[in-house]
Structures are given as structure tokens and as C-alpha cells.
Length: 93
Image 1: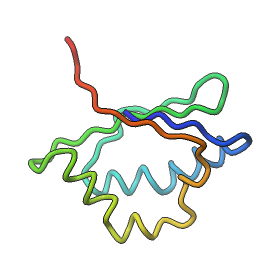
Image 2 (image 1 turned 30 degrees about the vertical axis):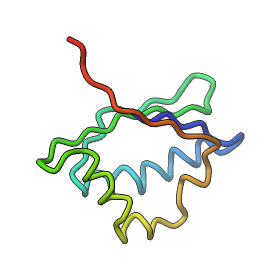
Image 3 (image 1 turned 180 degrees about the vertical axis):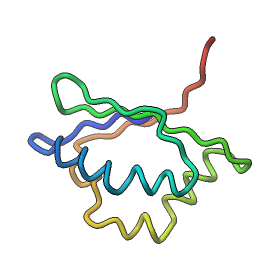
């Protein structure tokens, strides 16, 4: 799960860039975007990312961040964020 707080006035631009660049690149690397939400106050963005490959999430995530494709994202949507939090979660049912 990833929770991002956009800089003041940058939320819509962040979401647009994330949809155009980050989401499709994650999907090309075998990840599934299980959901993405915007908070009602309009600055917080939450998304859940899954990966079911044999190498595991951590390895796939490291490969994604080390890739030339990720390094080439221009402009990088992360520049529009004030803060980012990420953590692993598991179903409880």
C-alpha cells in the first residue's frame, strides 16, 4: 500500500502524470494496481500494488526502481509529492 500527500496545488497534476507514466510502467513490470483512491480533501492519494511473480514483491520492486525505464520518467511525478508512506499488508479474512 502506498499513501502519498501531494504538494499544495499539485494533486491533479500528480494523478494525471501517475496515470500516464507510473501505472503503465508498473504494469509492464508485472505488477497489478489493485486500486487507487483520492481522499475527499484532495491532496492524499492511496494505491494498492500487487505482485505475484516467483521472485517476490521486494525483488520485483527493486528491479523496477533500478530499471532504465523508471530512471527515464520525465518529469518524475514524485517531484509533486510532499510525503510518501509505503507498507506491506495482507488479507485477514
